[in-house]
Amino acid sequence: MRLPIVTPKVEDVNSNWVALNGEKVTLNNKITILGFSGENMLDNRGNYFLLTDKIYSRNKAFKDFQIVFIAPEGTQDQVKSVLERLSKLTNVSGYHFVFAPVAEIEAYYKQLKLVEKLDSHHGTKFVYIIDKERNLRGRKGKSVQGEAEYKEGYNINSSAELHNEMTDDVKIILAEYRLALKKNNAKRKI
Image (tube, rainbow, N blue to C red):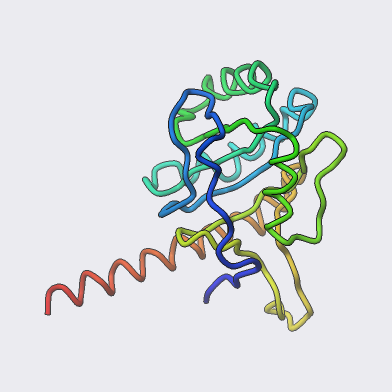
């Protein structure tokens, strides 16, 4: 089973955007959970704990897995506060926040070609799965029950959605790459 591509070849993170700790952040060759934190991050800090518990903690051991949030410039102190609290629960080295001007965040989000729009704070409660080739992955077509299904993002306000749907979809992506790695290793032995 493969997770469908919703938007092919999304742009990489702008290299001019500044990361919280100065590192270069890229979506290339990483399985990324991509989010847009908005200007009111502290009001939504519980969402980050939920995402950490349901998704990040279960997958942080995979060296190619990361969480990237694009945040408006000026929210650095809010991000530091949230990361400081999260770091008391787990190693947050796979969490990356990059800061950009609001207009650039809006333009970047637009190229994702999503149904959902950013809110008035330039953020969204949804996160998105981006594969190693920078394809946005989700659900479209028919569900296992045969019903029409479309899902481009996962609501980090919803414990059930993260636990049930997103956990399954991240497992599918990781399994795809494990299978590809096994095939490549088998070819090398021949």
